Amino acid sequence: MNIRNVAIIAHVDHGKTTLVDQLLKKSQTLEDREKIDDRVMDSNQLERERGITILSKNTAVNYKGYKINILDTPGHADFSGEVERIMTMVDGVVLVVDAFEGTMPQTRFVLKKALEYNLKPIVVINKVDREFARPDEVINEVFDLFIDLDANDEQLDFKVAYVSALKGTSSMDSDINTQKPNMDAVLDLIISEIPEPNVELDGPLQFQGSLLDYNEFVGRMAVGRIKRGTIKTNEMVSILRNDGSRKQFRIQKLYSFLGLQKQEVLEASAGDIVAVAGLSDINVGETLCTIGFEEALPPIHISEPTVEMTFGVNSSPLAGTEGKFVTSTKIEERLMREVQKDVSLRVKRVGAGEEWTVCGRGELHLGILIENMRREGYEFQVAKPKPIIKVIDGIEYEPFEYTSVDIPNDSVGTVIDLLNRRGGILEEMNNGMSQTRLIYTIPSRGLIGISTDFMTASKGYGSLSHTFLEYRMIESVDVGSRKLGVLVATEQGKTTTYGIGQIEDRGVLFVEPNTLVYEGEIVGECNKEEDLAVNVIKTKQLGNQRSANKDNTVVLKRPRMMPLEVCLEYINDDELVEITPKSIRLRKKILDTVERKKFDSKRLALKKEGK
Ligand code: GDP
Image 1: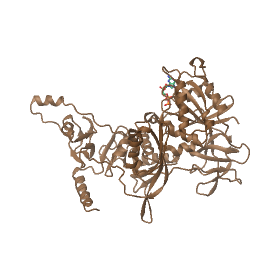
Image 2 (image 1 turned 180 degrees about the vertical axis):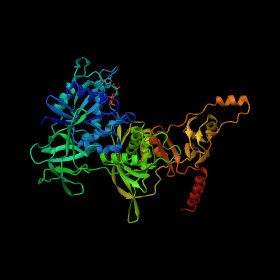
Image 3 (image 1 turned 45 degrees about the vertical axis):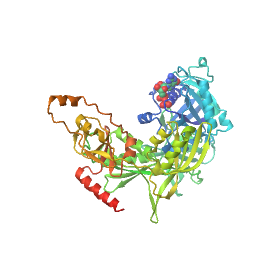
Image 4 (image 1 turned 45 degrees about the horizontal axis):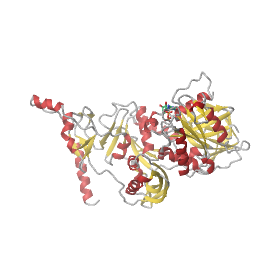
């Protein structure tokens, strides 16, 4: 069969995008007139900044009469469900490794999954043109990594292509002088090493969607690999639904992949990866069959949402001043569009329509949605992420996750300490030569906001993945909430050096001088447990010239940077994060200082009475 399906795995900056560019250019997939942009695969700027791929994209290359589908893999733990679904569509993986930097821990998780799915790996050592490139050593590192990840003998026998994606050259030999001005070494290896799809060309249709896609013309689509037979536009098919029911519908449009585009096709055969449109609520895992030959493929596990967050229309005094889309209609439209292509996302309107409950796989999953919306020009506010609680017979249950971490041996102590504090239960521990794997069950609550602490605890060399396990009764362990109060502005206006200087010794500021703030905005962290209302817009009464001059030379400490993820894990129940294209602000739900103090003392009194 002349189709090959591969997933591509690379640590950020190791050259995946450049490589895919070159594969497209050098394979003559595209006509010369179809110029491709640089930066093909991860068009999403956000992914670049966070060092992970978020939305997997498909690319396809024609080479020597073969069609090669290349699927991108997201690298973060919140997307482990998606990684697994991608692994079911491919027969091999291309691991891209920088010839100088060598293997990086962040790719371990995806690679491990690929090996578990018995996929055949090939290795691309990229950037061989780099000064100090050390391809032979890096190959040894890859080999050690594969052993560490329990690769089988066939997988350990991986083939290697040496590449400069930048220059568009490749070779099967590590000697730089053997580089040829094409990508044949990579493409030939894909064809010879990666097995052909394990599918049946003849027989009634069987197709299962593994991912969702969406466009405004045809709505939702299922993307998957055809397991048996042929699928044709306009044909009536049967669908075996996840809820056990059956339905018939007409294939309205069919797309296969070529280059960077989806291309409309009239039919496609077993082995190929296609997007199918025609049923507006089609879902991942459902099987399409020829009518009369209904036979379901094994169900696909869809990761349950475990974390919820309330999104709301921005209600701050600065609402509407920085964003393009601010109304509830616009926000709701945008959220609903996201639901169409993300199986692990749920959105429910709360009450009159100024608020929505948005459920996802983790705070990073929701954080990316928030960041994308912000960049598209939306303005809104969100509350603290919380685990999704279920009440059965009056008893509350919370989600627990199966969590697997790989860490260097010398950080085992600190990581165990961290996970225990977060309510985790150590289930298993495997020591490798240099790495240790810990298996934990942990409440989702304990995973919220863990990434920064985990990176610190493992000195940046750990990887953590989690999948939903089950609901368990809530035990009231504190998983580490904020210990300190906040500094809250009492007035609207621009912050002054003087005002900030006056309160510097009361805590850590989040804002610089000359920043517009409002009453109720959180401008810093207090060094006491209680909140403190502060005036940061105060100007100095100009008494005599000397002290006015002195004020000019006041040197303030640098404010603490509060990026979105940090804000999301930072806030308490009585606080919100305000998000606009220009700013991310922390605020109290109750902005009025007097009102809030009344509310707080009432709450304190209730707490003392033990309610
Ligand atoms: P990605 O994050 O894995 O998609 O990596 P990119 O393709 O964006 O590449 C990251 C950086 O490495 C860019 O600045 C590229 O120009 C550079 N790069 C990619 N391939 C090569 C190569 O073969 N040699 C050299 N010297 N630089 C490369």
